[in-house]
Image (cartoon, rainbow, N blue to C red):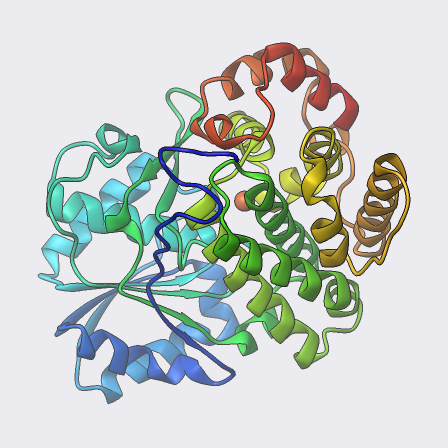
Length: 388
Ligand SMILES: [Fe+2]
Protein backbone atom coordinates (compact mmCIF):
# COMPACT_ATOMS: atom_id res chain seq x y z
CA UNK A 1 0.00 0.00 0.00
CA UNK A 2 1.37 3.43 -0.96
CA UNK A 3 2.35 5.66 1.96
CA UNK A 4 3.49 9.29 2.12
CA UNK A 5 4.60 10.73 5.48
CA UNK A 6 2.41 8.19 7.28
CA UNK A 7 -0.60 8.87 5.05
CA UNK A 8 -2.11 5.81 3.41
CA UNK A 9 -5.30 5.53 1.38
CA UNK A 10 -7.13 4.56 4.60
CA UNK A 11 -5.21 6.47 7.25
CA UNK A 12 -5.28 10.23 6.89
CA UNK A 13 -6.11 13.80 7.84
CA UNK A 14 -8.34 15.88 5.62
CA UNK A 15 -8.48 19.64 6.03
CA UNK A 16 -10.77 22.17 4.37
CA UNK A 17 -11.98 25.66 5.28
CA UNK A 18 -15.60 26.53 5.95
CA UNK A 19 -17.25 26.40 2.53
CA UNK A 20 -20.13 28.51 1.22
CA UNK A 21 -21.27 27.71 -2.31
CA UNK A 22 -24.20 28.86 -4.43
CA UNK A 23 -25.42 31.29 -7.03
CA UNK A 24 -25.88 34.78 -5.66
CA UNK A 25 -23.78 34.05 -2.57
CA UNK A 26 -21.37 36.91 -3.29
CA UNK A 27 -23.69 39.17 -1.32
CA UNK A 28 -22.63 37.21 1.80
CA UNK A 29 -19.03 38.38 1.54
CA UNK A 30 -19.43 41.27 3.99
CA UNK A 31 -21.27 39.13 6.55
CA UNK A 32 -18.49 36.52 6.30
CA UNK A 33 -15.79 39.13 6.97
CA UNK A 34 -17.74 40.47 9.95
CA UNK A 35 -18.41 36.98 11.36
CA UNK A 36 -14.69 36.20 11.58
CA UNK A 37 -13.98 39.42 13.42
CA UNK A 38 -13.24 41.97 10.71
CA UNK A 39 -13.98 45.68 10.99
CA UNK A 40 -11.71 47.07 8.25
CA UNK A 41 -11.58 44.87 5.18
CA UNK A 42 -8.57 44.81 2.86
CA UNK A 43 -10.15 43.78 -0.45
CA UNK A 44 -7.68 42.31 -2.94
CA UNK A 45 -8.77 41.85 -6.54
CA UNK A 46 -7.64 42.62 -10.07
CA UNK A 47 -8.64 45.45 -12.41
CA UNK A 48 -10.38 43.13 -14.91
CA UNK A 49 -12.80 41.94 -12.29
CA UNK A 50 -13.73 45.51 -11.37
CA UNK A 51 -14.92 46.08 -14.93
CA UNK A 52 -17.09 42.95 -14.69
CA UNK A 53 -19.02 44.48 -11.77
CA UNK A 54 -18.22 41.84 -9.13
CA UNK A 55 -15.90 44.07 -7.12
CA UNK A 56 -18.60 46.71 -6.82
CA UNK A 57 -21.03 44.05 -5.61
CA UNK A 58 -18.51 42.88 -3.00
CA UNK A 59 -17.94 46.46 -1.82
CA UNK A 60 -21.70 46.93 -1.43
CA UNK A 61 -21.94 43.75 0.65
CA UNK A 62 -19.07 44.88 2.89
CA UNK A 63 -20.71 48.27 3.50
CA UNK A 64 -24.10 46.61 4.11
CA UNK A 65 -22.43 44.52 6.83
CA UNK A 66 -21.37 47.76 8.55
CA UNK A 67 -17.66 47.37 7.75
CA UNK A 68 -15.14 49.73 6.20
CA UNK A 69 -12.86 48.67 3.39
CA UNK A 70 -9.79 49.61 1.40
CA UNK A 71 -9.31 48.26 -2.10
CA UNK A 72 -6.07 46.94 -3.61
CA UNK A 73 -5.84 45.95 -7.27
CA UNK A 74 -2.09 46.32 -7.82
CA UNK A 75 -1.62 42.73 -8.95
CA UNK A 76 -1.10 41.08 -12.31
CA UNK A 77 -1.43 37.55 -13.61
CA UNK A 78 1.13 35.36 -11.79
CA UNK A 79 1.46 37.72 -8.78
CA UNK A 80 4.96 39.07 -8.22
CA UNK A 81 6.99 39.55 -5.04
CA UNK A 82 6.95 43.36 -5.33
CA UNK A 83 3.15 43.40 -5.81
CA UNK A 84 2.67 41.42 -2.61
CA UNK A 85 5.01 43.82 -0.77
CA UNK A 86 3.00 46.81 -2.07
CA UNK A 87 -0.20 45.15 -0.87
CA UNK A 88 1.20 44.51 2.59
CA UNK A 89 2.22 48.18 2.91
CA UNK A 90 -1.28 49.26 1.86
CA UNK A 91 -2.88 46.90 4.38
CA UNK A 92 -0.81 48.39 7.19
CA UNK A 93 -1.30 51.97 6.01
CA UNK A 94 -5.08 51.43 6.15
CA UNK A 95 -5.03 49.64 9.54
CA UNK A 96 -7.02 46.78 8.03
CA UNK A 97 -7.83 43.70 10.11
CA UNK A 98 -9.24 41.14 7.65
CA UNK A 99 -8.19 40.15 4.11
CA UNK A 100 -10.73 39.33 1.42
CA UNK A 101 -9.41 37.98 -1.89
CA UNK A 102 -11.79 38.09 -4.86
CA UNK A 103 -10.70 36.78 -8.24
CA UNK A 104 -8.74 33.99 -9.88
CA UNK A 105 -5.73 32.19 -8.47
CA UNK A 106 -3.55 35.28 -8.85
CA UNK A 107 -5.78 37.51 -6.69
CA UNK A 108 -6.31 34.82 -4.07
CA UNK A 109 -2.63 33.81 -3.88
CA UNK A 110 -1.69 37.49 -3.60
CA UNK A 111 -4.25 37.91 -0.77
CA UNK A 112 -2.69 34.94 1.04
CA UNK A 113 0.84 36.28 0.60
CA UNK A 114 -0.19 39.75 1.82
CA UNK A 115 -1.76 38.12 4.91
CA UNK A 116 1.52 36.27 5.54
CA UNK A 117 3.65 39.41 5.28
CA UNK A 118 1.49 41.65 7.48
CA UNK A 119 1.49 39.09 10.29
CA UNK A 120 4.98 37.60 9.96
CA UNK A 121 7.08 40.40 8.44
CA UNK A 122 10.26 39.68 6.47
CA UNK A 123 10.50 38.86 2.80
CA UNK A 124 7.81 36.71 1.15
CA UNK A 125 10.55 34.53 -0.40
CA UNK A 126 11.53 33.46 3.14
CA UNK A 127 8.29 31.47 3.40
CA UNK A 128 8.95 29.23 0.41
CA UNK A 129 8.56 25.57 1.26
CA UNK A 130 6.70 23.69 3.94
CA UNK A 131 5.38 25.23 7.19
CA UNK A 132 7.69 28.27 7.44
CA UNK A 133 4.97 30.54 8.84
CA UNK A 134 5.24 31.00 12.59
CA UNK A 135 2.60 33.63 13.43
CA UNK A 136 -1.15 33.42 12.81
CA UNK A 137 -2.52 35.25 9.79
CA UNK A 138 -5.30 37.84 9.91
CA UNK A 139 -8.78 36.42 9.14
CA UNK A 140 -9.04 35.49 5.48
CA UNK A 141 -12.01 35.07 3.11
CA UNK A 142 -11.39 33.90 -0.46
CA UNK A 143 -13.90 34.08 -3.32
CA UNK A 144 -12.89 32.42 -6.62
CA UNK A 145 -14.20 33.91 -9.87
CA UNK A 146 -12.54 31.39 -12.19
CA UNK A 147 -12.99 27.62 -12.22
CA UNK A 148 -9.37 26.62 -11.95
CA UNK A 149 -7.00 27.49 -9.18
CA UNK A 150 -8.52 25.82 -6.09
CA UNK A 151 -6.65 28.46 -4.08
CA UNK A 152 -9.85 29.19 -2.12
CA UNK A 153 -9.55 25.86 -0.30
CA UNK A 154 -5.88 25.01 -0.64
CA UNK A 155 -2.90 25.14 1.71
CA UNK A 156 -0.71 26.69 -1.01
CA UNK A 157 0.16 30.12 -2.36
CA UNK A 158 2.17 30.45 -5.59
CA UNK A 159 4.21 33.62 -6.07
CA UNK A 160 6.47 34.66 -8.98
CA UNK A 161 9.99 35.73 -8.18
CA UNK A 162 10.97 37.69 -11.29
CA UNK A 163 14.58 38.12 -10.11
CA UNK A 164 15.15 34.37 -9.95
CA UNK A 165 12.79 33.75 -12.91
CA UNK A 166 10.85 31.15 -10.99
CA UNK A 167 7.58 30.57 -9.24
CA UNK A 168 7.73 29.33 -5.69
CA UNK A 169 5.19 27.64 -3.49
CA UNK A 170 4.36 28.48 0.12
CA UNK A 171 2.79 25.48 1.81
CA UNK A 172 1.16 25.77 5.20
CA UNK A 173 -2.15 25.03 6.87
CA UNK A 174 -2.14 28.72 7.83
CA UNK A 175 -2.74 29.85 4.24
CA UNK A 176 -6.00 27.95 3.84
CA UNK A 177 -8.63 30.67 4.41
CA UNK A 178 -11.17 30.79 7.20
CA UNK A 179 -13.96 30.86 4.63
CA UNK A 180 -14.12 29.82 0.97
CA UNK A 181 -17.09 31.49 -0.74
CA UNK A 182 -17.95 30.48 -4.31
CA UNK A 183 -20.64 32.23 -6.34
CA UNK A 184 -20.83 30.37 -9.69
CA UNK A 185 -22.57 33.39 -11.25
CA UNK A 186 -19.18 35.12 -11.36
CA UNK A 187 -18.09 32.66 -14.09
CA UNK A 188 -20.58 34.28 -16.45
CA UNK A 189 -18.17 37.16 -17.12
CA UNK A 190 -14.99 35.08 -17.37
CA UNK A 191 -13.44 35.73 -20.82
CA UNK A 192 -13.83 32.83 -23.28
CA UNK A 193 -10.12 32.02 -23.40
CA UNK A 194 -9.99 31.49 -19.64
CA UNK A 195 -12.97 29.16 -19.18
CA UNK A 196 -11.45 26.22 -21.08
CA UNK A 197 -7.94 26.65 -19.69
CA UNK A 198 -9.17 27.13 -16.10
CA UNK A 199 -11.29 23.98 -16.40
CA UNK A 200 -8.32 22.07 -17.86
CA UNK A 201 -6.24 23.17 -14.88
CA UNK A 202 -8.96 21.85 -12.59
CA UNK A 203 -8.89 18.56 -14.48
CA UNK A 204 -5.13 18.38 -14.02
CA UNK A 205 -5.61 18.96 -10.26
CA UNK A 206 -8.10 16.09 -10.18
CA UNK A 207 -5.88 13.72 -12.19
CA UNK A 208 -2.59 14.51 -10.43
CA UNK A 209 -4.09 14.37 -6.93
CA UNK A 210 -5.86 11.11 -7.83
CA UNK A 211 -2.52 9.49 -8.72
CA UNK A 212 -0.57 11.15 -5.88
CA UNK A 213 1.07 8.81 -3.39
CA UNK A 214 -0.61 10.93 -0.69
CA UNK A 215 -4.09 10.30 -2.12
CA UNK A 216 -6.64 8.73 0.19
CA UNK A 217 -10.14 7.31 -0.14
CA UNK A 218 -11.47 10.74 0.78
CA UNK A 219 -9.33 12.77 -1.65
CA UNK A 220 -10.15 10.28 -4.41
CA UNK A 221 -13.88 10.81 -3.89
CA UNK A 222 -13.39 14.52 -4.56
CA UNK A 223 -10.94 14.01 -7.44
CA UNK A 224 -13.24 11.57 -9.25
CA UNK A 225 -16.28 13.78 -8.65
CA UNK A 226 -14.40 16.69 -10.23
CA UNK A 227 -13.52 14.52 -13.25
CA UNK A 228 -17.18 13.44 -13.66
CA UNK A 229 -18.42 17.04 -13.55
CA UNK A 230 -15.79 18.23 -16.00
CA UNK A 231 -16.28 15.36 -18.43
CA UNK A 232 -20.01 16.02 -18.61
CA UNK A 233 -20.08 19.84 -18.53
CA UNK A 234 -16.74 21.32 -19.59
CA UNK A 235 -17.25 21.45 -23.35
CA UNK A 236 -20.84 22.68 -23.06
CA UNK A 237 -19.79 25.35 -20.56
CA UNK A 238 -17.08 26.61 -22.90
CA UNK A 239 -19.30 26.55 -26.00
CA UNK A 240 -22.65 27.72 -24.62
CA UNK A 241 -22.03 29.28 -21.19
CA UNK A 242 -25.18 27.74 -19.81
CA UNK A 243 -25.46 28.71 -16.08
CA UNK A 244 -25.96 25.08 -15.01
CA UNK A 245 -22.80 23.97 -16.82
CA UNK A 246 -20.83 26.90 -15.38
CA UNK A 247 -22.04 25.92 -11.92
CA UNK A 248 -20.74 22.40 -12.56
CA UNK A 249 -17.32 23.86 -13.41
CA UNK A 250 -17.30 25.90 -10.20
CA UNK A 251 -18.28 22.78 -8.25
CA UNK A 252 -15.57 20.75 -10.01
CA UNK A 253 -12.99 23.36 -9.05
CA UNK A 254 -14.06 23.10 -5.41
CA UNK A 255 -13.89 19.29 -5.41
CA UNK A 256 -10.51 19.22 -7.16
CA UNK A 257 -9.22 21.92 -4.80
CA UNK A 258 -10.13 19.85 -1.75
CA UNK A 259 -8.49 16.79 -3.35
CA UNK A 260 -5.17 18.40 -4.25
CA UNK A 261 -4.88 20.50 -1.10
CA UNK A 262 -4.80 17.24 0.87
CA UNK A 263 -3.20 14.82 -1.61
CA UNK A 264 -0.86 17.31 -3.34
CA UNK A 265 0.10 17.02 -7.02
CA UNK A 266 2.70 15.48 -9.32
CA UNK A 267 4.93 15.93 -12.38
CA UNK A 268 2.42 18.12 -14.24
CA UNK A 269 2.58 20.90 -11.70
CA UNK A 270 6.31 20.54 -11.14
CA UNK A 271 6.71 21.28 -14.87
CA UNK A 272 3.93 23.89 -14.97
CA UNK A 273 5.54 25.94 -12.18
CA UNK A 274 8.92 25.71 -13.87
CA UNK A 275 7.47 26.99 -17.16
CA UNK A 276 5.34 29.62 -15.40
CA UNK A 277 8.42 30.98 -13.64
CA UNK A 278 10.18 31.70 -16.91
CA UNK A 279 7.23 32.60 -19.17
CA UNK A 280 4.41 34.96 -18.25
CA UNK A 281 1.81 32.55 -19.64
CA UNK A 282 -1.43 31.68 -17.86
CA UNK A 283 -1.10 28.65 -15.61
CA UNK A 284 -4.25 27.15 -17.12
CA UNK A 285 -2.76 27.24 -20.63
CA UNK A 286 0.33 25.40 -19.44
CA UNK A 287 -1.77 22.79 -17.62
CA UNK A 288 -3.91 22.29 -20.77
CA UNK A 289 -0.81 21.47 -22.80
CA UNK A 290 0.84 19.16 -20.27
CA UNK A 291 -2.15 17.17 -19.04
CA UNK A 292 -2.34 14.47 -21.78
CA UNK A 293 1.34 13.60 -21.41
CA UNK A 294 1.14 13.69 -17.61
CA UNK A 295 -1.82 11.31 -17.75
CA UNK A 296 0.20 8.90 -19.90
CA UNK A 297 3.15 9.15 -17.53
CA UNK A 298 1.04 8.40 -14.44
CA UNK A 299 -1.17 5.67 -15.92
CA UNK A 300 1.88 3.64 -16.91
CA UNK A 301 2.40 2.72 -13.28
CA UNK A 302 -0.84 3.30 -11.33
CA UNK A 303 -2.71 0.54 -13.15
CA UNK A 304 -4.70 -0.57 -10.12
CA UNK A 305 -6.56 2.78 -10.21
CA UNK A 306 -7.43 2.72 -13.89
CA UNK A 307 -11.01 1.48 -13.53
CA UNK A 308 -11.84 4.25 -11.07
CA UNK A 309 -10.13 6.80 -13.32
CA UNK A 310 -12.09 5.53 -16.32
CA UNK A 311 -15.28 5.95 -14.32
CA UNK A 312 -14.31 9.56 -13.66
CA UNK A 313 -14.02 10.10 -17.41
CA UNK A 314 -17.47 8.63 -17.96
CA UNK A 315 -16.18 5.33 -19.37
CA UNK A 316 -17.27 1.79 -18.65
CA UNK A 317 -14.32 -0.17 -20.00
CA UNK A 318 -13.36 -3.79 -20.04
CA UNK A 319 -10.28 -5.43 -21.42
CA UNK A 320 -6.55 -4.87 -21.17
CA UNK A 321 -4.79 -2.13 -19.26
CA UNK A 322 -3.48 -0.74 -22.55
CA UNK A 323 -6.98 -0.58 -23.97
CA UNK A 324 -8.27 1.27 -20.89
CA UNK A 325 -5.38 3.74 -20.96
CA UNK A 326 -5.95 4.49 -24.63
CA UNK A 327 -9.68 5.08 -24.13
CA UNK A 328 -9.09 7.44 -21.21
CA UNK A 329 -6.41 9.29 -23.17
CA UNK A 330 -8.65 9.58 -26.22
CA UNK A 331 -11.54 10.92 -24.09
CA UNK A 332 -9.26 13.50 -22.50
CA UNK A 333 -7.73 14.74 -25.76
CA UNK A 334 -11.16 14.91 -27.43
CA UNK A 335 -12.43 17.01 -24.52
CA UNK A 336 -9.48 19.39 -24.76
CA UNK A 337 -10.00 19.67 -28.55
CA UNK A 338 -13.66 20.55 -28.04
CA UNK A 339 -12.70 23.24 -25.56
CA UNK A 340 -10.13 24.68 -28.02
CA UNK A 341 -7.45 25.07 -25.36
CA UNK A 342 -3.74 25.32 -26.33
CA UNK A 343 -2.32 21.90 -27.14
CA UNK A 344 1.42 22.44 -27.57
CA UNK A 345 4.16 24.23 -25.65
CA UNK A 346 5.26 25.80 -28.94
CA UNK A 347 1.83 27.41 -29.37
CA UNK A 348 2.08 29.20 -25.99
CA UNK A 349 5.52 30.62 -26.77
CA UNK A 350 7.88 28.20 -25.03
CA UNK A 351 11.27 28.05 -26.80
CA UNK A 352 12.56 24.60 -27.68
CA UNK A 353 16.08 25.43 -26.53
CA UNK A 354 14.75 26.12 -23.02
CA UNK A 355 13.34 22.63 -22.48
CA UNK A 356 16.45 21.13 -20.77
CA UNK A 357 16.64 24.01 -18.28
CA UNK A 358 12.90 23.83 -17.63
CA UNK A 359 13.22 20.11 -16.86
CA UNK A 360 16.18 20.80 -14.57
CA UNK A 361 14.25 23.51 -12.71
CA UNK A 362 11.21 21.24 -12.32
CA UNK A 363 13.43 18.64 -10.68
CA UNK A 364 13.62 20.90 -7.59
CA UNK A 365 9.85 21.14 -7.22
CA UNK A 366 8.13 19.69 -4.15
CA UNK A 367 5.28 18.30 -6.31
CA UNK A 368 7.62 15.51 -7.43
CA UNK A 369 7.58 14.10 -3.89
CA UNK A 370 4.02 12.83 -4.41
CA UNK A 371 4.35 11.66 -8.01
CA UNK A 372 3.36 7.99 -8.34
CA UNK A 373 6.47 7.47 -10.49
CA UNK A 374 9.94 8.68 -9.61
CA UNK A 375 10.78 11.21 -12.32
CA UNK A 376 14.36 12.06 -13.20
CA UNK A 377 15.46 14.89 -15.46
CA UNK A 378 15.27 12.65 -18.55
CA UNK A 379 11.66 11.71 -17.75
CA UNK A 380 10.73 15.37 -17.33
CA UNK A 381 12.49 16.36 -20.55
CA UNK A 382 10.74 13.52 -22.36
CA UNK A 383 7.32 14.83 -21.23
CA UNK A 384 8.25 18.35 -22.36
CA UNK A 385 9.38 17.06 -25.76
CA UNK A 386 6.14 15.14 -26.22
CA UNK A 387 4.15 18.23 -25.29
CA UNK A 388 6.16 20.52 -27.58
FE1 LIG B 1 -2.91 24.21 -11.31
